Each structure stands twice: as C-alpha cells, then as structure tokens.
Amino acid sequence: MSKTATGTVRWTGKNWAVRVTMLDGSRRLMKIDAALGEGDVETAKILGAEISARVRAEIGTMLVPAKSGLSVSEYFIRWAARKNNRSDLTYKYNKHVAPILGALEIGAVQPAHMEAVVRYLDDAIRTKQLAWRTANAVWFMLRSLFREARTSKVPSLRVITADPTRDVQRPDKGAERIKQYLWPSEFLQLMQSRRVPHDFKRKVALCTYTYTRLGELIALDWADVHLDDGYIHVHQAMNAATRTVGMTKGANKGATLSRRIPIEPALMPLLRAMHQESGGVGPVVGNLDSPKEWSSRLKRYLRLAGVSRAELFGAGGTTCPVRWHDLRATGITWAIVRGDNPAVVAHRAHHTNINTTMEYIREAENLRATFGNVFPELPPCVIEPRTVFDKNFYSGPRKNKSARESAHVQSATGK
Image (tube, rainbow, N blue to C red; front, side):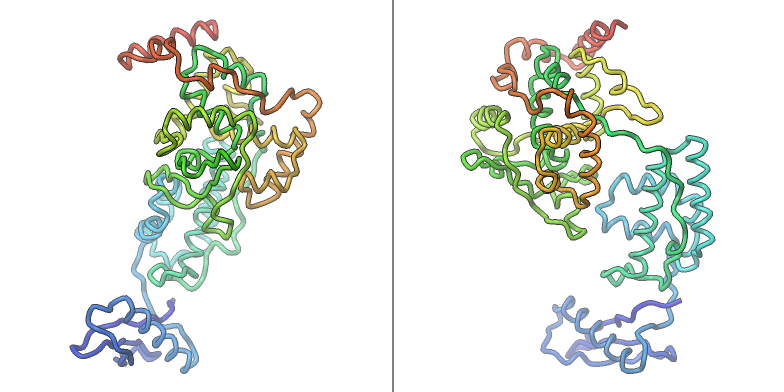
C-alpha cells in the first residue's frame, strides 16, 4: 500500500527544507533553493512537493510505503468537508455505508467489501425499503469517495493506490418514475386561487417560467435581472446544507459556471412589478426554507386551489408526488411542447447531458396536441401588490394560520 510522495517541509532557522522518504525507508533532508522567509509556509509546501516528486522520479518511482491508518468513516469526514458537509451525503453514508464499511481501514477495503454493499442495496431495493435511485445514489457517492482517495488533486485525500469499486457492478435499476409537471390549466388554477399566498404564487411563477433550480432561484439577485435587455444572468446557487452562496450545479464538473436566459414575455410584467416594489436591490426571492418544505407547501396549495389530479399527490409504481423541483420540469416540458430548439432548452436549463433534455422531448411528443397554451399570461392578482384579503388571511399567530389552512384543505378535498 502506498501513496504519492509529497515530502514534509520544515524551517531550519535559515531556510526551508523538505524531508523526503526514500525507497529504503530512510528520511533525507533537502534544502529548498528559494528566497523564502519563515512565514512562506504554503510556498515552501508547494516547492517541497515538487522536489520530492522530482527525486522520486529520478530513482524510478513516485510511490513510497505508507499506512494511512484512516478508517473509512474517518476518511469520509475528511472527504465530506471538501463537499461542504452536504447533509444528503452524510445521511446516505451513516445510514447505508457506515454499518458495513465504517470501521475498516480505508486501504484494506477490497472489491469483496464493495460487493457486500451492493448486495445490501439490491436487497433493500427488492424489499422496497429503498428506492432504486436512492440506492444508486449511495453507490455513486462511494464511487466518488474511493476515486478521490486514489486520484484526488488534494494530497491529503490521496491515501490508496487501488480503487476497490472499479470492477464492481452497480446496484440494480428499477422502474423509471415519470417526472411530474403541471398542465397550464392547473398552473392557472394555482395562480388564480385566493387561498394561495401571494408571495408563493410569485415564486411558483418565477421558477416555472425560468426553470431555474431552487438554489439558483434563492441566490438570484436583482443585479442579475436585466429587464431592459430582457435576460437573467444565472451564475450562483444557494447551498441548502451550508446556507452559503456558491457555484451552480455541475460547475465543478466542467460545465459552464453561468448562463444567460431570456425572460419569457408573460413573466416580464411580474418582474417589473417586483423590481419596483423592492427598489431593485437585494435578492429577488431570498427564502431559505428547505427543498422539502417548499415541496410540502406546493402540494398543500395545489389542493387548496382545487387541483385534484391524483398522481400529483400520491406515489405509485411509476409516478411520484409533485415536488418543488417539478416546477422546473414543468417549464422545460412547456418549452419543448411549444417547439423550442432542444439545444437552446438544454442550455437554458443548464443540462450537462443532452440525454436529460431528450427525456422531456419524448414526453412532450405525447402531449403536444392536448396540452394547452403554455407560458400563459399571469393573472393581475399575481402581478399587482398583495391584496387586503391576502394580508388579513395570512397574518396572525402561526397556529391560527395553520388551522385556517387545514379548514381550506378539508373544504377543497371534501375531507
């Protein structure tokens, strides 16, 4: 078991030097020939790594004996920190990986261990304890972790020389679930309902007509909305786990960091109204609720608006309940139904794989004749400032608000 030699730097009192481990295990101190001061630690580390690599290359190898001593769980903590400690990764690891691999030394993990993980995931899929997409997400997380453990650009993350996941088959795939989306008539029901909060309607309209991701919508600032030129500049996203603004999805995988998307004509009046109300300063939306909470509200308010299509609210074998993310799918589907160029839609949606866009194209072909008028004009009640009715209905103590909402759900559903 071995790792790439990077050397250890130290200040000698006069200059920096790097200690390099030789093939026989001896440690040799070599001077770093550069005009560095005692405070130039990072530069010394970089130059030290270069010297160590060059010396090892000259003697025929860059590999030195090493024992990381890290368990898989200890390594996961280090790896997850590089991923901004995303809560979804931590949950998947603790729930499905740690009981099987957590206590093992990471360098001792073999393909047989990975096959045991796959068997566990396959059993969970078969017994319906785990959705097949979730099981595969766990597997791809493991693939990423061990790949970085072998080839990461960060020296401290390179602790193994062989990837135990490389030749292991992924978990089984199940039936593909159809993405949910709203019909234009259902969208307008939501927009016109007096039982749905004014601000919520606006957020739904923004997400549907721009088909941005939730994190991108939350991070959108008025400085990025160019009303006179007719486009929105999407270049950052809110991280749900850390509540910090960073890169858009896919930007760290070679995808374009930013994109400019045209403003739908039907959305322009709303954006102008919101711009005037806010003074054109600060976030356009600025809400930090979790995706799960946004999805829960969407289902609740669709019911309040009288939308009753059963597949939007209950999971089946091939469908799943509507989520907030499905508003993005709604906008993309509408654009394809309208006949927009798939390449343009793919860029606007920031799809890194054209096959993702093709899924919407195939679905749209089945719906084009009966789908209705897409991207309809927004009703005045959405564009105009919040009405007196909205203020009265949604003000007051939270428990009273919940009671009123519950009463309206019962009225809308007949339960």
